[in-house]
Amino acid sequence: MINLITTYAGLTLRNPLIVSSSGLTDNIDKIKKLEKAGAGAIVLKSLFEEQIKYEADDLKSRTDYPQVEDYLNYYVRNNSVDQYLKLIESARKSISIPVIASINCVSSAEWINFSKDIEKAGAHALELNVYVLPLVKDAPSKTYEEIYLKLAADIRKLIKIPIIFKLGQNFTNPVNLIDQLYNRGIQAVVLFNRFYSPDINIDEQKVVSSDVLSTPEEIRNSLRWVAIASHFIEKIDIAASTGIHDGKAVIKQLLAGAKAVQVCSILYKKGPGYISEMLAELGKWMTKNSFSSPDQFRGKMNYGNIKDPVVYERSQFMKYFSSQH
Image (cartoon, rainbow, N blue to C red; front, side, top):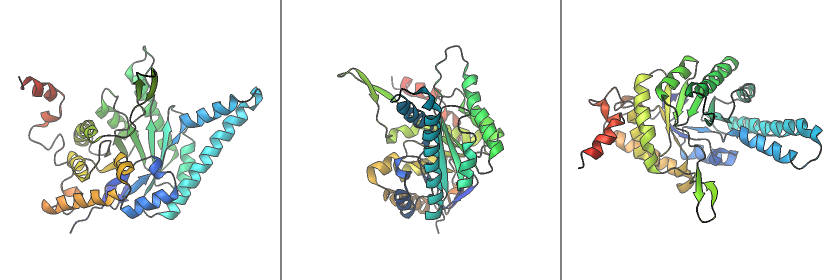
């Protein structure tokens, strides 16, 4: 008999499929539908530090009274925070699966104290999406990594609920960073976050947003690093994200070593009900291969468990093309 129960960041999930932070998780009605469809957990839509600052600046630009600046900053921030805390409280009362709060930060100190409010509101865990664009040419990469590590250490001191870092793909040594996060008490990481990416409209000659939804092909990079990191840092849980569009992709990431997977884009395209189809595909594959739980095959094909781990290394890309001539 198939049992999909898994643990992730200290939480017990009925299955490893998590709906990631997005517009799919920004109100109670949507969240209830995701639970009914079979989601193992949900990550609430992020509270964006950038958005709050933008709204405050927009309001300030409409007034000629500089003395109202502090008031507008306070009003916009607290109004956004209060609404978010109410969403957490409502979600906890409305569904039985884990509710993971999410903050999207661009600074290391802005949201530290707010994490305590999230814990009090009842979130089962906190996922942090930190993105600092490295624009200072004289700053070494360590400068930017320290922002993540300081934030991890500071928030870990304040709250007891599990903390998860959702990381981008632009780190020189992801394995080292993940290890340093683990040493600061972080229970899980998500590989990888999908940030806003610019594009250029050549007809209008202006900068526009690229496609916000992922494609199935984008699983390749996360699959590589899930397989590598799950071998070298066994004590931290890893969730895979980006490019997971069907049950086969879920299976691949679990084989690579993921404790859970986060899905989003495919649910925008096919609706919440597609969760049950992905889980059915996972269950059918497990039955065919005589697995009764994800633990029996998780990490079976990670960097340390395959005969030739070199296939996960970048040099193989060049060898492939050189062998075609």
